[in-house]
Image 1 (tube, one colour):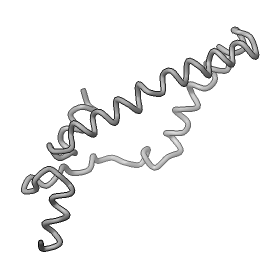
Image 2 (image 1 turned 120 degrees about the vertical axis):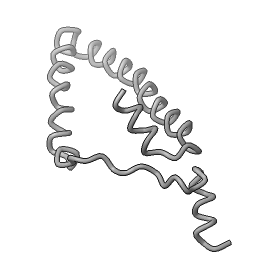
Image 3 (image 1 turned 90 degrees about the horizontal axis):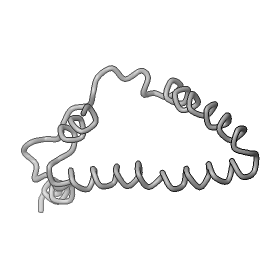
Length: 98
């Protein structure tokens, strides 16, 4: 809910569909890669060892976020300028005085 609300507020209406589709592609597109990697790890080291390595890797993602600049952010960035067309290419074209 928070992510969808932020995306709707932050992105211009003209690019909202592309942003949503790109995020879904990146999120769901990595699932087969993870399954392939997990299967290879289980085959190579055994199921029990592969699951322990996976379990140890989950806190690693939290550690990456804790060490990143995201930790220090307290405010969400502002939204798009409502006067624009919603299409970044149109706004750039208008700024150039054409």
